[in-house]
Length: 291
Ligand code: HEC
Ligand code: HEC
Ligand code: HEC
Ligand code: HEC
Ligand code: HEC
Ligand code: HEC
Ligand code: HEC
Ligand code: HEC
Ligand code: HEC
Ligand code: HEC
Ligand code: HEC
Ligand code: HEC
Image (cartoon, rainbow, N blue to C red; front, side, top):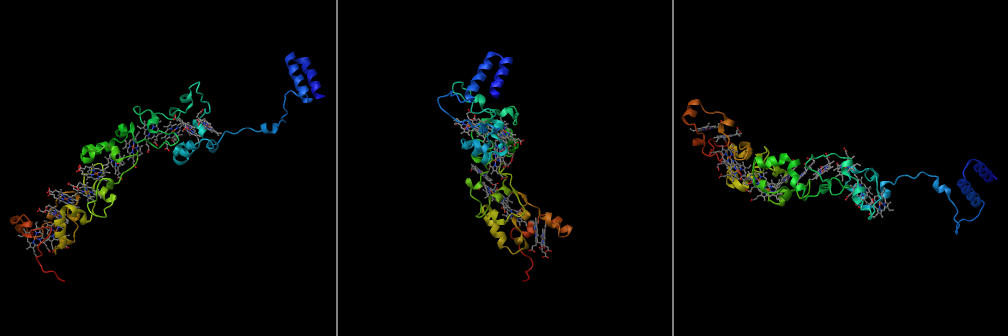
């Protein structure tokens, strides 16, 4: 009879509406049917505190965003709700789609300066933030972020200066092989070797590595390569770049390596070494070689 007791207390202290509500409850509790069906209450279902959905639970329905974040999310690999603090709230009637979508500006300032805005034109998918569209507008902005490259191309103009960045860099960060567009000078040359001689943004700024083999020169200077290798003097053992070191077309002086080997009067009278030694690539050998 606890409920009846309760009612009587309420009757004393409360208004009539509460009295009626409690009266109804007491009838229900006493088994009086108020619905046309019977469903047994299961209050234990409600004795828990619901947890926010995890990313993988969202993914049971939204495979695309999850897969994007999983494969290429980078530093965006955190809980969906960090960005989507409002979701499942879109209503065509309200036309609120854009309003409920997360905004880059709520977490980022202007990382590329005031000139570059409209984040999603380049970062086209927030779930794969480092994937960048290789079409406009990024093509208009290469120089803003890579000014040094533009400078390289301009300070030493070459035929690459006239090639558009995206003709080579077909997607952002992609670095093409020289062989997409060129043949090697000699078989077996690697891209790493090409780059040793030709800095790609200044391909005419040719600098020889000290280990460059002489066959590299043979496509264009085959006569000299053959002559030198067939000679019998000690120069035959040298590589081209031992003498022609540094930049292409550099011509060394004999005295760089030999100083002045003959007596001073002799050198004063005959200043040109090659008037006697004739051909640097095929020195006449004065002494018979000891075998
Ligand atoms: C809820 C906050 C939040 C929102 C909204 C957000 N970001 Fe981020 N973003 C971050 C955090 C945090 C990082 C990691 C920063 C760090 O490590 O310094 C990050 C990193 C990034 C990175 C670098 C990714 C990497 O792996 O290096 C890019 C690019 C980026 N965000 C672009 C965007 C763009 C574009 C938008 C809008 C479409 C956006 N973000 C919206 C929080 C956010
Ligand atoms: C860094 C912030 C960020 C994170 C983290 C993030 N989203 Fe998004 N999401 C966005 C933004 C911004 C948009 C709006 C894109 C647009 O306007 O095209 C979006 C759009 C969506 C959309 C609607 C468009 C679509 O692609 O279908 C869904 C669904 C979605 N996100 C699900 C998720 C799920 C699921 C997760 C977690 C697994 C998640 N998002 C994590 C920022 C985020
Ligand atoms: C049981 C399936 C299901 C789960 C789980 C689910 N969603 Fe959705 N979600 C939908 C459906 C259905 C739509 C509406 C159709 C659509 O846009 O694909 C939707 C739409 C969205 C949208 C775009 C429209 C809007 O109103 O926001 C976002 C963003 C979104 N969900 C985010 C999430 C996030 C974040 C989670 C996890 C916290 C999540 N969803 C969990 C089914 C689900
Ligand atoms: C014109 C294209 C373009 C636009 C527009 C653009 N970004 Fe970027 N963003 C890039 C590129 C390219 C990278 C470098 C990606 C890489 O590291 O490979 C980048 C990198 C980032 C990074 C990572 C920076 C770091 O130091 O790791 C963040 C964060 C970022 N962008 C946020 C934004 C936000 C926010 C906006 C809008 C205000 C925006 N971006 C607009 C092209 C763009
Ligand atoms: C918003 C700034 C931004 C814009 C615009 C941008 N880049 Fe980048 N780019 C970056 C950042 C940041 C990196 C990664 C850091 C780095 O290596 O310099 C990067 C990396 C690269 C790399 C790879 C570098 C390496 O060492 O692996 C190439 C190639 C590249 N960008 C080419 C381009 C081209 C071509 C364009 C124009 C179509 C362009 N970028 C536009 C910011 C930008
Ligand atoms: C003829 C093809 C070609 C053109 C044109 C070209 N690049 Fe490159 N770029 C390359 C190659 C190949 C590499 C890789 C070089 C390496 O690995 O040393 C590279 C490397 C880069 C790098 C990373 C290394 C560095 O030097 O910082 C950036 C950034 C870059 N290019 C930006 C640009 C931009 C911006 C333009 C246009 C102004 C451009 N490139 C034009 C072929 C090209
Ligand atoms: C996307 C195509 C492309 C790629 C990749 C490329 N080039 Fe070129 N390169 C060209 C074009 C086009 C020319 C001009 C050809 C002509 O007019 O005969 C050129 C010219 C040159 C020249 C002559 C420059 C001059 O001004 O005389 C050199 C040297 C060169 N490339 C070296 C390289 C090297 C080394 C690589 C790799 C690191 C490379 N290229 C990658 C397209 C490319
Ligand atoms: C040891 C240095 C060296 C190496 C390695 C090298 N080159 Fe060259 N390359 C040169 C020289 C020197 C020239 C001639 C420049 C001149 O005409 O002034 C040249 C010219 C070129 C030219 C201009 C067109 C021509 O044939 O005259 C292209 C294209 C070229 N090289 C591409 C390449 C490629 C691709 C590779 C790698 C497979 C490569 N080079 C490796 C030194 C080198
Ligand atoms: C792709 C062709 C090519 C390659 C490879 C090449 N050269 Fe040349 N080289 C030339 C051209 C073209 C000239 C200019 C010829 C002229 O003016 O008659 C030249 C000129 C020279 C000259 C003479 C400069 C002068 O003032 O007369 C030297 C020295 C030279 N090259 C050395 C080398 C060496 C050493 C190598 C190999 C490490 C090499 N070259 C590879 C094309 C090439
Ligand atoms: C980069 C250095 C270098 C340059 C430049 C150079 N030589 Fe030599 N030369 C050598 C070396 C190394 C030898 C071998 C010395 C030895 O084995 O004792 C040599 C040997 C010789 C010999 C002896 C040949 C023999 O087979 O006994 C003569 C003669 C000679 N050089 C003349 C010249 C003349 C003339 C010039 C200029 C046209 C010249 N050299 C430029 C490095 C050089
Ligand atoms: C011992 C040093 C030395 C070596 C090794 C050497 N050269 Fe020379 N080269 C010279 C000198 C010195 C001259 C200038 C000769 C003159 O003034 O007539 C020259 C001139 C040249 C010239 C321009 C004049 C001409 O004859 O066409 C070319 C091209 C050349 N060398 C290419 C090569 C090549 C390719 C190799 C390797 C096969 C090579 N040289 C090896 C020292 C050397
Ligand atoms: C008038 C001719 C003449 C002139 C000019 C000349 N040489 Fe010689 N040089 C010779 C003769 C001859 C020999 C051989 C001597 C011997 O075999 O004992 C020789 C030998 C050499 C040798 C080899 C020495 C050895 O011990 O094997 C070198 C190195 C050499 N000359 C360098 C030079 C240089 C460098 C110049 C210019 C600065 C030069 N020569 C000018 C005639 C000349």
